[in-house]
Each structure stands twice: as structure tokens, then as C-alpha cells.
Length: 463
Image (cartoon, rainbow, N blue to C red; front, side):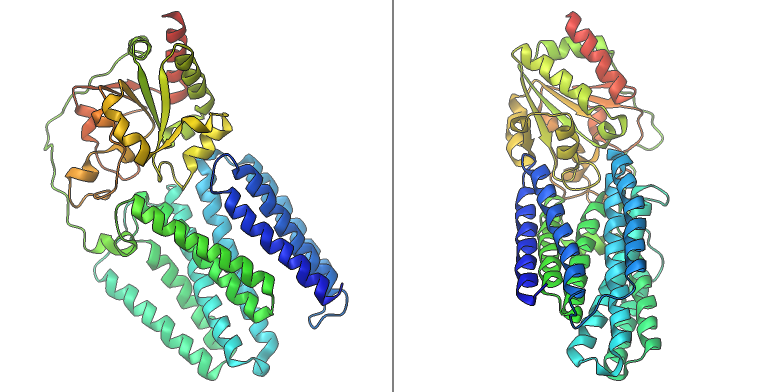
């Protein structure tokens, strides 16, 4: 394959990545965007084999090992992606992202060792950048996985002098980076990788569970930048383009998510060091809530004129998306206006609820973003919250110092009636109590969301 054909096919792959990002901007076109992106990635992989086999400056060696590694990746990745539950999708994204960053760092190290004394200053700088950011992305993504999987505490992990330890580690990374650039050598490069791995862990530990999706997006942007830098080291325009696209889109998404949480990115990452302790609001007093039966909920819904359904992580846990679609269709058939109120960070990752509801073929027209649905709650008869807690918690507006303070929320409290479907009185992912549960207009229906919705649907059919 000639260089011209290689560059042309690389351009096709790069355009495919751009079109994929465009498709992913809307739930209606997201599936098509994924397919276009997969096509671009497949093309980009294949042309490397054919170009290298034609006697390029970097001939393809160790072909059996490369094909074996690809086979292992396929055997692990395909079943994992197909069998993963929707509730675990963010964890899978975190792992994929971490593996990408780690792979970019390893490739940069290997290429640096191959070039040896022939490496230019620009190549060394690009290698150092790739190793640092790639290792941070790898270890940081592992911590986000552990938090999302609840294998460790989801609360911010802070310790005495933590900010100074983080600052000291960062300074050490910068100093060793200068050492590598000035003197070179394998030992300082490995030391740099180890320090960067430690910094990645320290970087993510202070982040609370509710903010983990923002960090995943940020680390995704980091991974894109490492790929772009490794593309410079490998003289691959395609890697530079693909990495830059990922880095730019990840950065934009991170800023949008931080805005949706109502805080700065710096506050998201390091706010735990300056947050004030929350005052206890309830003391030892035990407060009661108003619970109800599925039949009573069905009667309330039957006489409503407008119902807004607010999905959350609990809906994904119960795999109740098809049942809630059945309920919405039944209400619509009765002439009731139904909409789904979607918070930008509901669930565990951006677009989590959109993907979940798309799985049940919920009409895209019924998915209403927070900015559009909030003004309508005053005219809403019933707000039905299914497994969501933090994104409707008034503490985000009323309780300074709490983990979600300042985050824009869905204003369900303005609805005439609020119904919560919950398994228990356990707090949401942020670990704070929701005062809305004790509001006189709020009714709780306890139990598994899918079972509760099935009972509501049956009762509604009988009304």
C-alpha cells in the first residue's frame, strides 16, 4: 500500500470519527454514530497491517504476537461488552478508558527505548507527556471503577496533610520529567511512570461518588491527549487526529458536566479538602414518611392530567425500563400528558438514562432535559421518581457544605404530588438524606422498582 493510499484511508477513518461524535450528540442517532465510529476504528487498524507489510519505515514485526494479542482482546472484550448490565456500564467505560491510557504510556516507553540516543527533543517531550498523563489516566480510572463498583467508599477520601502530599507528588512528577528530558535513560522514565501512577490515585481519591462521572470524563480527555502525543512519537497522523478528537470532546463534556453539577472543575476535584462539616438536622428524632400501595398510586396517576417520570440509577438496577415504558404508554392512552425528566448526571455517567430508556424504545420526544422540564413542574399533577435521589434533593439548594450543594436539580417539589419508588430509606449515592421524602405531598412506594411498577400497571388497567 502506497503512502498516498494510506493517508487517504486514514483521512476516511478520521472523518468517520468526526461523524461518530456528531451521531453521539443525540439519542436518536447514537446507535448510528457508534457504528460509524466502529467502522473508522476497524479501518484504522487494518490499514496499519497493509501499509507496514509494504516495507514502510516501521516494518511490522512479531505478527503472531500481535494477532494473538488482538485475539485475546476480542475474546475478553466482546463477551464483557455484551453481558455487562446497564448498571455496570460506567464501570466498563472507566476500565476501557484506563486501559487506553495505560496502553498509550506503554507504547511511548517502548518507542522511547527503541529510539534510544536517536530520539529528538520533541519526541522525548512527547514521550514524557504520554507516560505521565497515560499513567495518571490508568490508575485514576481504576479508582473510579472501585468507587462506582462500591468496592471502596464512595465518599471523598481525605487525610491529614493530603493536599500537601498531592502537591508534593505532582512536584516530584515534574522534577523527574525534567530529569528524563535532560539526561534520558530507562531508570528515570520508569520512576516517572511509578510516580504518575501514584499521583493518579491521589488525584481521584478526594472525589465524592456523585462527582465520579465528571472525573471519568476528564480522564477520558486525558487518554485522548496521550494517544495524540503517542501519535507524534510514532509519526502517525491518524493517532494524532483521533486522540485530539477524544481529548477535545472529553474536555467539552467535562466542562458541561461540571456546569450541570453547579461547581467548578477545581471544586469537584479538590473541594473535599475545603468542605465544611455538615450540621446534623435531625438529631436522634425519628421522623415518619407517608407510604402507600400500588393501587393508591394507580388511582392518583389515573386522575392526573400531566405526569413527569424522573428515572435514576434505581431504575437501571431493577431493569425496569420496559415496565416504565408500559406504564407511560398506558397513561398516554388515557389522554394523560407524560414526559421523562432527564438530569444531565442522573445515573453513573453522562447519558445513562437516555441509553437505558432507548433500550425500551421510549419515544425521544418524551425525553425532556432539565432546563426544559423544570418550568413545567408547577403545572404537573404527579412527579414519579424511580430510583433517583440526589438529582431531586433540595439539599443541593438549601444545605451549604453538603456534597451536592450548588448542583442544579429537577424541581419536582413544585409538582402537586410527588411519588418516590424506593427500596428503602437508604440515602442516594452522595450519602445524604433527602428532605423531600418527609414533605406532606410526598408518597413512598417501597419495593423493587420493577415489581412496584408492574403492580401499578396492573392496578391502573383495573381502574
